[in-house]
Length: 149
Image 1 (cartoon, one colour):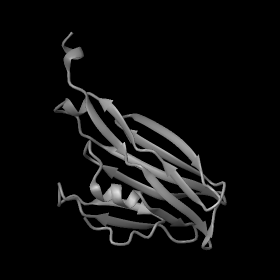
Image 2 (cartoon, helix red, strand yellow; image 1 turned 90 degrees about the horizontal axis):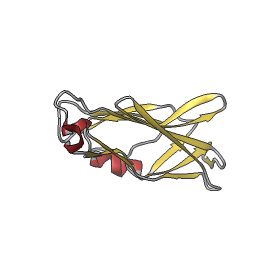
Image 3 (cartoon, rainbow, N blue to C red; image 1 turned 45 degrees about the vertical axis):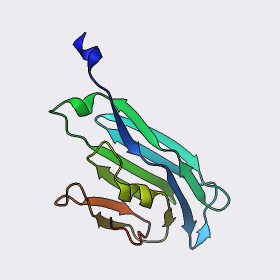
């Protein structure tokens, strides 16, 4: 009975995502983009297909959970967006967050993920304003201009 009274929390797994895929600076149309979101041991996977101009879009994704109310629970959300191209998995975005709310820097950057598939993947360290000793690490094909804060 007490378990039914426990509070549920909104856990933001991913903000709205918009991006564009190019190969040799040409739009990559009809390319599948896969989004994998993991919280606790649960994984949610969805897909979209790029348009004629290489653009893709995913809606914001949140879930309800009682886990954040458990003092022994450590929040860990993994976000992966990737595509398979010429027999390779290429990461458009791979990051983790440790809060139930999406970091503002993720919201801003994921609203314009423009990936050129011929570039090398980069790893960026983004400022974590809530926990400055623990920056966010993002693995991506995208050039993240002005990515701080």
